[in-house]
Amino acid sequence: MRRLNHQRSLLLALTAALAGALVAAAPAPAHPERPSAFPDATGQFPAYRARGPSRVVCKSDSRRLIGRSVRGSRKRLALRLLRRCRYRHIQAAVNAARSGDRILVLPGVYREEPSRALPERDPRCFPSKTTQVVGRTPNEVKTTATYEYQVACPNDEQLIAVLGDSLADPDRKCDVKCRIQIEGMGDSRDDVLIEGDRSKLQVIKGDRADGLHLRNFTVQYSDFNNVYVLETDGFRFSDIVSRWSNEYGFLTFASDHGIYEDLEVYGHGDSGVYPGSGPETHGKRYGIHIRRVNSHHNLQGDAGAAANGVWFYDNDFHHNQTGFVVDSFSPGHPGSPQDSAKWTNNRSYSNNENYWTAERLEYCSSKPDYEQRDPKIVCPKILVPVGVGLLIAGGNDNIVEGNRFWDNHRYGTMQIWVEAAFRGEQDLALQNDTSHRNRYVNNLMGMAPDGSSAPNGTDFWWDEQGEGNCWQGNTTAPGRSITGDPASLATCSSPRGFAPVNPVKHAFLVPCAAADENDREAWFPPGCDWYEQPPKPR
Image (cartoon, rainbow, N blue to C red):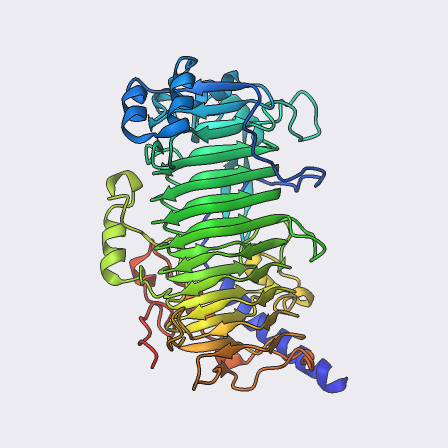
């Protein structure tokens, strides 16, 4: 016990020395949210509704597009719906909708011109209906829009706004425009395109919009999130392509009873999907399900500060810079530190794209305004390591079971401790509250689907901090052995007690945290190798 206390004392001393440097070096969070609260979790996962009251949206060329691309019974249904079309813009149909309505969108390109024409940072709302959010330090302050701002100026920040709380009472719950379903009525998700203007922060936002279901379309070109859901109990994203946003394909925050399913997400400067501040279920249930998602050619396939209670299964994350990421880095995220996510039957492979290169950063910095850039060129928003299949950056009680990781040139999985100072918590007693009791079991490492060897650089990399972390039952291609750093990993039948971080491994966090895409002098901090392209393993 005396030795353990001594180790903790050394750890706190190390933390105190590093925390000041980390806080000073770390860039501001990419997306400060307004102060948010979790819903009361009385909602449910939305079910698809093929019947019920509906409003039809169409374009002048919808009939021609239906004739060209829609077939069979789906075509007959679309032509019948065309006779009932009363709206040319999705936002107009949302404005007219009542709770439980379906909004049926016929084939066409929807640019939402009336919303585009409205001002951003409208003086009617800014700054009277904004609030300030403090980041990692008191000097790091961001201005964010309140919910009252959204109600007063619904299309200031997004082209399509579904706002569920009427403000008639103070309960912060959905009482108008709940259970709204917006569905593309083409044969495929390519038949309906919802296109942002690259200026508004969001293309679609659901705010306190319980029961929101988005389905069967393609969305592109936001300056922040293509789809954003906030403080919502019950949401579902089904059969959607989300591509080429400045930062995120799908972002949810402080929400519960959510499903991401049958999605393709690519070309995003931060991450394809972001289930941030997931429900605090502590492993008793999984409030957000992410399944059958194909996330590729993003900076991160997935990211999520305080991604709690999230279950990832049957997904393909590949050709990103890093595949899956959950973390406890960001301040202002309810539910921090992160805990109790689960990955089962996922495939994470070939996450070796490098967007943090001198050539890419030169291009992106020369055109700081997203509207000036080619939206199909990924401009990285943060530095994450090239070549990692899954990164747990300061998380607890996570389960990684029965997945496949191959051809990730740095690490199959990576686990690091993140001291609480990163999220603005200065209490020294809390600095080692992450990276405990994570389980990696029965995963298949370094073998391609055809059975050939496709090794990761190292299968499992760990900075050696925490207690109860374990690795057991993991296998690899015939004739090869599981690789780990450290070489001997604790088993789940004999988990290791608390141990401090390996200071040599932890030291890289300081220079890597100093990387800043907006500061040429901080693009490639000395001592950090995350931006270096790892060699292909043999």
